[in-house]
Length: 363
Image (tube, rainbow, N blue to C red; front, side, top):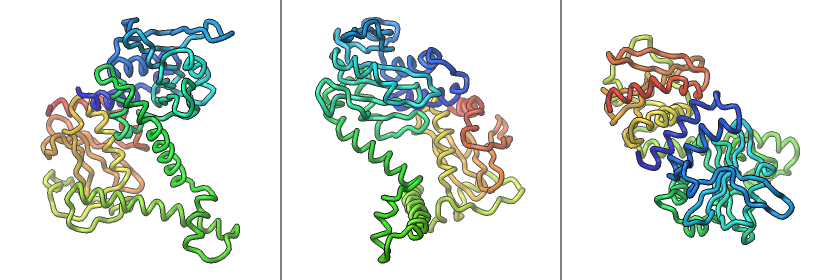
């Protein structure tokens, strides 16, 4: 598997096993060591490459240990501190990294709970670890734009100068993206005021703020939906106008729809929820095949995930059109479909092995 395939395969493993991992040691064994070994490519059993429980006494602090130090050419290059995966990462968790960063040659420090990986450097002040990460990788929702930067830290493509030179831009672009996402989810008063004063001539009173808080949230959501629709029309080559993303279609009839329905020239609605479900199925399937081989097609009856964009190679079907019930459709070797009710998209991971088995039948 290539780099991005290994990353998606590990992401699927994290999702599948997260409920069984309860301690810091289990987090290291199940998630962190596989990341170091399979993603970064370092031999976790070679102390010349990966030093567990790394010690570098700092001032009056004696005997403190960093979970892992990655060594290249006899010099420590990357420090990794781990926390249990169920916990949120905070600045307090990075205290040992701060102390160790200045007394080693490391230019990159990593704080992780196995799911979220925060990468730090010394952008703001030389030899002093920044308080904010320059890159955040979340295995629950991989940002593909970050993958080339992560790869620069791997053993085969190690490029520290490039990483450090790009770190400042990565830091601020990443922080801005997270802030924009937070504002779109729950706009602050300042965000609401910023847009309101550009379209409303009256005073920004408490009543106006309350009214426009709802309107700004609705407008930003509709804007994102419009952008997704434009991308979908370009990607799918759609010539007919598409219904807005997020608007539910009428429930399909009770009759089973033939596979050829996917090829009919009918107006369809593709929702964000369907696309998110597709990404989960794709992440699971990537443990068996390259991600470029996993496609999706939408129809009025269901959203299909296919191998090689072939109707005869269905991996799964997402029956999300009903507003009250959602089903994951899985097919056996005779193409008989079994619909599994799901309450949330996360429940797709409960059927990971069946999805992989379907991929293996065609691969």
